[in-house]
Image (cartoon, rainbow, N blue to C red; front, side, top):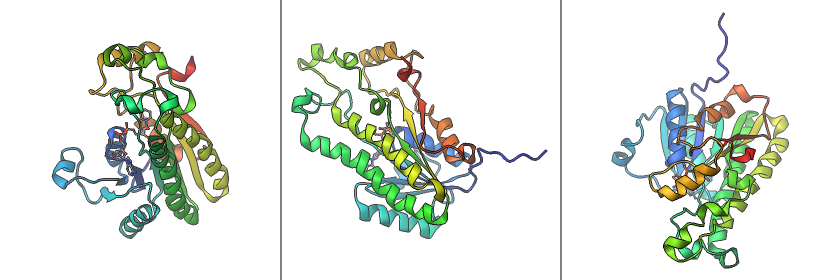
Length: 274
Ligand SMILES: NC(=O)c1ccc[n+]([C@@H]2O[C@H](COP(=O)([O-])OP(=O)(O)OC[C@H]3O[C@@H](n4cnc5c(N)ncnc54)[C@H](O)[C@@H]3O)[C@@H](O)[C@H]2O)c1
């Protein structure tokens, strides 16, 4: 029997914002392997020589566009160039995001009362406004064709407040308290209802919108104490590897999830199960 593969993404045109980052690169490699055409929208695009160390540079399957998602004109220019090359995309992955790392300096990791307004605005600008602008332009183009899948990338810290105890050890090292900042959490939480809004707005126009919720990914730059504290709170006992959200992405991008919209797919090692 010749059954159609519901996960098939052959020749689907897929935009990944922030595709040069840790998770975005894994999404890109997985999608290319599955025969999709991936357009990376990233604020800065390095030279080919640097890119070739990280990606198979196949112009039929992978294209790079220097797009600042916080600028409407930049998103439009990127979309126009992509449409001229491969046509209107089938999938938009709003993956670009910024956060304050555990290694952040004290002025952005201090008490909530002192959290700088400019950093608050900058984080909301990328995580919320950038996602809004990409959905408006690219989602709008997909809706005109009556098909498409939008995948917003959320975070467990957009669903739940951070466990500040995980970061408390830093005070003994730096002499100043470390508070996981508010801006990232607030910006990510906004994406949940934004996603539901899009799902209902475009529900009958063939464009689906869902959100994928990852938990923390292991990075070599994290210190051992941070990793130990995080893993102790994590039911599955370890941080995620950077490719462990690929399966969820393929599901949301493909026809396998064709009856799913407005949903939150949580891939978090059990973090939100306590
Ligand atoms: N890594 C984690 O532990 C983790 C956990 C939960 C959720 N997430 C979310 O997953 C997504 C990817 O995370 P990551 O760790 O791979 O991030 P990353 O920092 O490795 O990569 C982010 C990418 O976004 C790009 N970018 C930033 N601002 C941009 C802009 N204005 N326009 C275009 N591109 C821009 C950066 O250049 C970078 O390539 C983010 O939305 C993040 O919040 C990550």
